[in-house]
Image 1 (cartoon, rainbow, N blue to C red):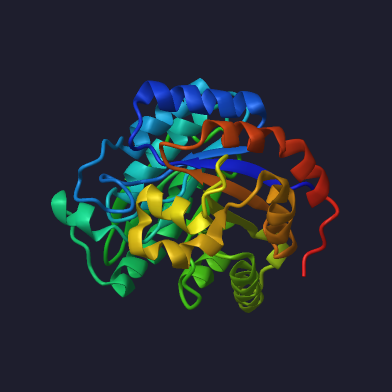
Image 2 (image 1 turned 90 degrees about the vertical axis):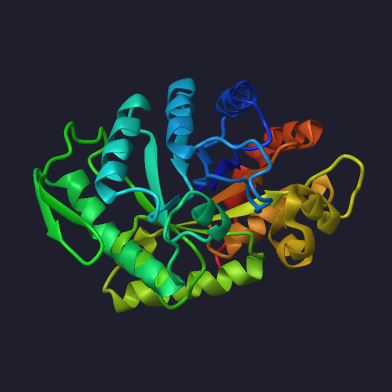
Length: 317
């Protein structure tokens, strides 16, 4: 089976007109997936100094502007929205897109924006508790006629979510690389799992952990989709990958993130993506931050057929 090839777009440092033009171009080029992220400030954090658009309203435009690619958010932070609101938004976006929306969820990490906008930002264990409670609640709201829930963090009373999504089962993704809880939650509750900015070897390790959690949950591991986001670091001038990543705002973290970037010469792109397919990825997304190299993006999009063909021959290891 050919790998799904997507683009994860950070909706910052660009106008809405530029973003809309970009994802129309991506849809026309035949990408399989287009996603945004859920932040209130720029990422990486820069003190709220970069123009940045909110995720749900951005997704409404993305859903209306495209017709082919599946769309989603990788991932919504459960701290920022009530699960009922997220379920209603997901259903609405599924209708706008004609059944192409997929819902990504996570525990959040961007403490500076949470503090700036007055959201509580508890320790990671408690944030994961909230995610764990929200997952089955959202699933129930998306699939059941009525949902009543009285939990530690969330509450619903005979809640309906009408109309139902277009899809019989609107996919839910979990994003993160935590081996003890995040991957267990993915195995227990999710249709797919996404990791960001990791090397192919690390993705292979995490993939094996996900398999073990699926086994522990009595689930066929093949039913959990696996995706990875790679920082788009191709350039036409031969700039070192670490420097490209550093230039996207990652600063001192660039050397540790560079192994999770798609960089180097264009003629190595196919083999690089196939490495992730061999490591267990069903979907590979390039992550764009403005400004990106337009010539290199064009070159990457032209390689989509070759990547898909090569991926059908890859053997997971």
